[in-house]
Image 1 (tube, rainbow, N blue to C red):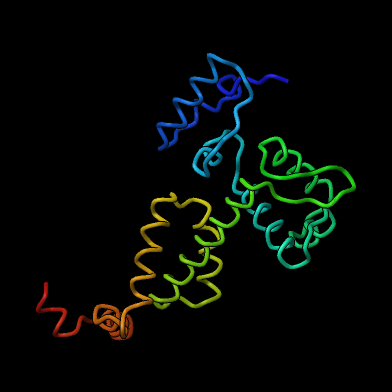
Image 2 (tube, rainbow, N blue to C red):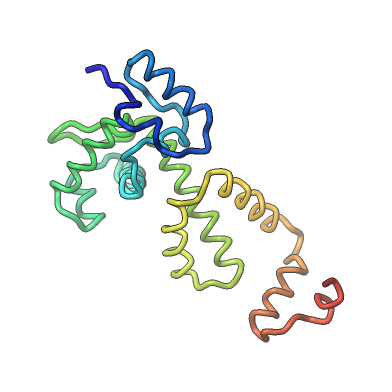
Amino acid sequence: MIRNPVRQGLATFSCDSSRFIYVALFFSIFPWKYIPRTVMEVKCLKGFTKVMEQYLETIYDLQREKGSASVTDIAEKKGVKAPSVTYVLRKLKKLGLANYERYRSVSLTAKGEEIAKDLERAHKTIKWFFCMIGIDEQIADEDACEFEHIANPETVDKLTQFVEWVKTAPRSPKWLEHFKEYQESGERSEECKQSD
């Protein structure tokens, strides 16, 4: 079936990727089936939601843990019923992110796996940053789970660079020590006051 991405609303979604807009316009003139090529293009698709991202993560985790994922496994892990899982899997299949056939195991396509890995990387980076600034680990994990779905990939890249820089520092950077003192006392140290 030939689909026109502009009629499906793909070109009307606001997105930072100008390349995506040009591709969507091209396919509105030449109505072949549009296949997104980058993570940003997938995230710009109308109808691609946070819930779908969470399903990609769940399938990815199950594939690593068990070698495969079934509708029953996904439903159990997400705490939902099988028809809800089937509904989302059909959408993921339509977007080219998951391989799904009734009564068979589910797997991610290369693009689906790439998005799942990006989400996992974002989650780890954001959680580590939140823990570094003194947030309780459980709260940091919950907040990272929310933030990873709304963060721009560029933001995650910069945050990853920052976190890696801090992790590889020979010892805890002075500013981080001063920040921890500030969190405990509510006042800046003398050294910090001098640099203002």
